[in-house]
Image (cartoon, rainbow over all chains, first blue to last red; front, side, top):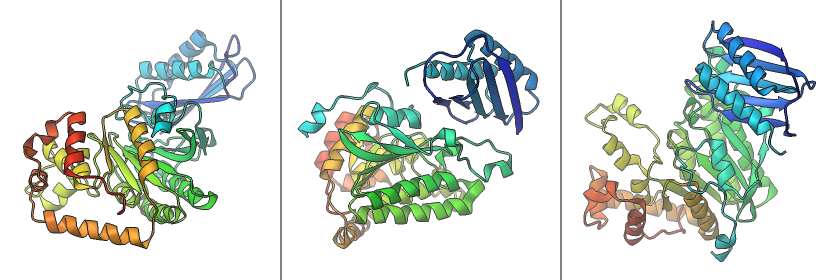
Length: 104
Length: 310
């Protein structure tokens, strides 16, 4: 297992009012993402526990791209990863932020 | 059941139970927006054992528990996520279900729905898992003794095996779909211990007609057989909550008599098809291929559901 903690600045706070959302499941090639609105408006933190060690550069690239696209300011994402591919990770992060943008 | 018919249908009623996640099953089974989770993922009550094995955790440890409404009435509900470690019972996973059943025992006769999707005990925390199974069975019987009806719903990809099969056997009633399998030892376990001549786990047709939902319904182990949709499970759960009776020593005596009669009548059969033939099914070999609606009609002719045992 490898733990990664990636902090980014977001241009603007995430929309919506929901406090918490969870998507996905921890299985081979899949992951769960827990999103929580607990940070200052322009902070974003992605904390990852993954079974696939040595992919820090890929995670960095995926998270940078995600924050650039969705600007999820104020959100902390906690990930339990079962070895998902980068496209699956991007999809789950996008699902999580979409849920957070919904009504409470 | 006019109350059932007037209840607003949950959204996404065509959703496959088999394909849905535990959280989707809970959300679509209950009345819309009625679910409140206990010990949700944000509490991070993860397994204390998996990290020792360098294995990933899940924030809810593979089970969702909480309360909600079904047809306007309050229910407690638990749903296993069959894709996380095969829905297996670990220490925290088991404690969440045991706690829910103890709540049903203590707060009054509130129904409990258990959405099984499990291969049994999680081997990495086997002692804690086995203890959890025993605690859950005790809590379930105590809840039923206190007046709670406990309905098991089975139709997930992991089926209902091992300790899950034992817990299902303690329920007031079970709803099963064709994909739902109910047993204790799984196909691979039987083959490993008794040989391929005893049970060929790669023979999927054999597995399904021995452990699958149709056989469990015909044998009387499941009260209701439904098509693979969330709406069908919802309607069956609502109907059973209105039908199942109380629980006491008399129920257990009748259950014992039912099981003895089953062994007496079918103990000599080598295959499920032999049992169906003995039950009076004219074309027993065609049963596995029957569409759900035709099978439900057949099952109602062959075996009337009796609610005095269990």
